[in-house]
Image (cartoon, rainbow, N blue to C red; front, side, top):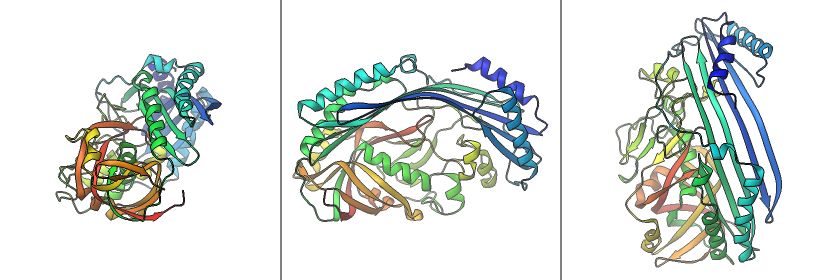
Length: 450
C-alpha cells in the first residue's frame, strides 16, 4: 500500500508533463495472498504484489491508452508518451464527451485492517479447522482461500482526485467422497464476516446427501436454485444484457422492452455500488460517482447502466459504470448486482416442492446462444438433488440445462428472504447479492454419467 497522499503526489507529478488537451491516470494496485488446498492438505501458497497504471490522453476527439505496471518515474513518462503517440494515430471518436470534472463521493468503508494483515499462517489455521470437519465424515476437502488488499486512485487534468483503499476475503470449498461432492463459499470485505466452519459443515452435508446419486431424465422441472446458482445466472445475464453496449447494439434482453413486463412481478434487480453491506465501491474508473440503477422493477424492464461515452450517445447521464480504459470498448457493465429478497424463509422453500430439483451451483455456462432472449446453457455441479413431497430424496447425477432465463423467471413461486454475497469476475470492486429462487419451470436438456 502506498497511501492516498503519496500516490496522488506521484501521479500528479507525471500528469504535469502531459502535452495532451486532457489526461487521465488510473492506478490499480493490489497485494493478494492465496492458499490452495486439495486432498485435505495445503499444497500451495501464492503471494502477488502488483500494480497497473493506465494513461488516457486526449487530443481533440482522438484518444490514446497505454499502461504499465512500473511506478518508476521514467517508466511512467514513457507510458504517457506512448499514450500520446497512440492518440495521434487514432480516428476521432465523435461520442467522446471529454474527461469528467471533480465530484464528491459517498464515504464507504471498504478496508478492513485485519484482512489486510492476514498472513499465510492465519489462512492455514482456518483451512486446518475446515479440513477437520471434512475428516469426521472421511471426506476430502479442496478449494482456495484468498485475502487481498489494494488501492485505486484516479487523477485527471480537469481536477478529478478519487481514491479508495480496499480489502476482500473469499473462500470456496468442495467436500468429496468417492461418488459425490458438496460446495460452499464465502465472500466479504472483512475476513471476520466469513463463518468458515459453518461453510464447511454445509459442504460436508451436501456431500453426504448426494452420495450414490441416481440418474434423472432431462425435462422441465420445478427447481430450487441456491444463491451460488442464481449468482452464476445473473453474472451471465448481466454480461450480455444489462450493459450499455449490448443495449445500444440491440442484442440485449432489455432492448426494445423498457417499460414492459419481462419476468414475474416478484423479480427486482438493481445495481447498487453504494450498499455498504455488499462489496461496495463509490466511483467508477473515470472517477464518476456511482448511482443506484434499477434494471428490473417488479418484473418490469427499467434500464441499463452507462459510462459517459455511452450516455452521450443515448442522450442521458452516466450512472458511474465505466470500466478500465482497456475494457472501455465493452461499454458500461453493472458490477454490484442485487436481486431483491422475498418473504419466504429459506428453510421452508423445499417443503413447498412436490417433485423437483435442488441445484447448489452451475458451471461452464454459455450465454452467447441467443442473447435477446437470455438463453443460457450450463451444467449442475457439487450438490444436485431430487426433491419429492417437500423432502430431499437423493442426490442425482449432474444435468445440463438450456433455457431462456426471462421465461423461467416468469415462473417464480418464491424468493428467500435471506441473501448471500457471490463472488464474480469483478470481485475487487463488486459482487452479486443473490437469494434462493423457487422456479416453477426450468428446462434440463441433457444428463451425465456422474
